[in-house]
Image (cartoon, rainbow, N blue to C red):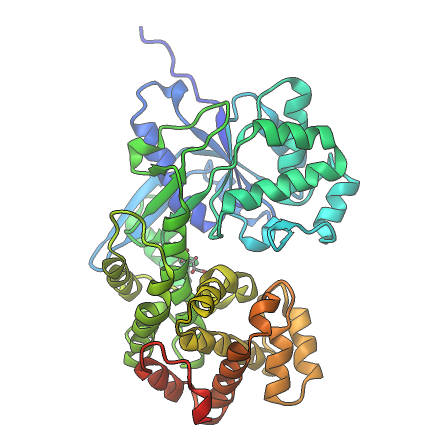
Length: 484
Ligand code: CS2
């Protein structure tokens, strides 16, 4: 008789169990498990929802299994994911989550919590962030993601268990370094010995993650019935493309054999990350903001518009590609052409409104970093300035029409709008937003002049005229101001 199969223990805990991680990394663990013949060697994953119990409750009704649906231009492919075995909600299941995170079998804690979840200011822990102030006062009952990691690592240290590897999967520059800074920064405020142990023992690999995963719509949900057997209350829809580049820097507990399932393990993720954040996410942010102003609700509708497509092409060729150090063996022009095709997939209803959320947190790596480098290299920044002016127009329109602005800085932005009575002073006040624009950029004459003149022109002539002009500008032209 064959011995009974043993269920694998939870080896991975993921903080921020949203659609992205379920469509991006869990399929990878699922594929890895398929390659591991012995059940007990496989990867079982626990997800943690930090903000709402909804996903826990939906998945609990179906044993935490769900489907990923790959949307190809001409067909859908459904896959069942079974490696997720539990989901906890931080607000109600704290003790259970911390107990699992402290268990010796857990070797990896991964995160997709978006930039604001890191509770940082300029790459360092923001000790005045309300969640961090709470976690400093109550280290054993944390509410922030860094707080959960520090509390779990404290338990492991006390029990003589090695630290797990902390793997950020967020779209941020040097995401692993940022995670390391906020985790050790928080530990230092409560237990310097723990901070020193984390610094010496724990690993925080940097990663670049890429797959377009729009929010699931009602139409998508209706489609699920056609694609899968039974009901699925928590399906995720995604494009076919998938790329994961991971720094080969894992801690004492080792790592899954990610390379076996197509992850690129490299010594330095930075060039991949910069290329992706600027070419993909930078143009996404541009399409989202300018697309919203131009009446385009989805990325595919935006990129099908000749004015927006012309603008994005010129943004890539004139201002983004020149700012990127291309990873070895990559062809960045082909990379951007492929992005154009990915954005055009009409079966992916990626809402421009969704991407435009939290732009204050997204501008730095996507738009401001290439802008700063172009300024010091004497290259054009005009189109990047149009994206900034587009954001200023977009947030103002939302506030004035009394819709909800989804941005952690919404309150400050509303105060600026209420306090400024003409376009020029509004632009100056917004460029002064701390934590968004570094002083060197906010005070740069060329940035002030160009953002102000685009802002005025959007108001006077409309976005279409600006897109047309920006796409037609001379290479390296920075001289629009003379025209105003
Ligand atoms: C998007 C990203 O919402 C956004 O800000 O730019 O989620 C984008 O779809 C992913 O990074 C693609 O990998």
